[in-house]
Image 1 (spheres, rainbow, N blue to C red):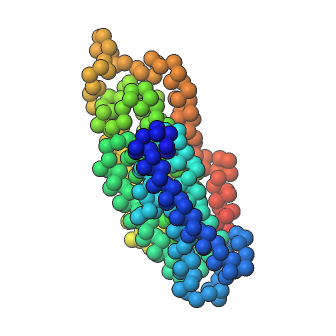
Image 2 (cartoon, rainbow, N blue to C red):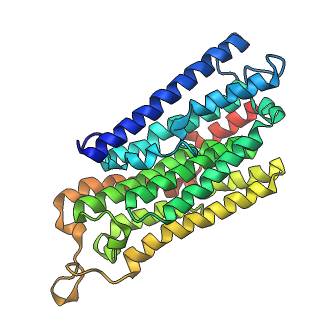
Length: 349
């Protein structure tokens, strides 16, 4: 984050360190309290805690400590560090949003719900409803923030905040399909979001443009890049033929299994909001007239991808991640992802 060594970069770095260190102390306190109550910190299917281990209030406090220890998950109101982190170079942003940091946060919460408390105890304590409410608020508000953002990377950052909460939403349902959808959304979102950030980085490197309002006609100048971006955007909206359809399908089934139809409405509204903030980018890129300087002699649109020999090193990775994002829709058990999720859910329930 501090790579640019300017005022914004250092401010974002300090903010991230503050979030990280504070959440680390909450997590440490939660681990110590867990050991005091259960006598172990070994992850176990069905959880290591029970209602007999402590009063209800103590277990609720423990869950809150774990949640505060997982601020990396960027659930609201502890999300501000993530848009600020967009000052980092785009490959770093891709790792932050798709693979490393934020995924550690949501993966940790999945483990806490499933292997520390257990889905049964979470249901008994009523924690799933509260967690689902926080996830729902984050999903909706994150999308609204994305709609109002003109900077491409920051819009993707708010999209990440919203999409991460789909994972929290799934485990909060404490239903087999909901937990399965949450587990599948971790890798599927990774492939789709890294595609989007690599495309944003390629656009910035080749054209120097960072604002969505500046991207008129860019789809005809960089067709491979914007096709890959469109694939990632379709997946984020939960539409076939991209992998996001599979995970969101299971999340919808999970709300029905849990009998929480209001949450089904939340996930459908959130997916509609995804369409509202992603497809104007696609429309601007492919259907708006190109800006001055984009047209060569004979009114031919300049193909910037051909003009840059080094562009091959950018387009190959984003093309591969876009391809995998589609393949996982048709073959969700590739690399045994679906089977692993089914085995895990079978052990939990």
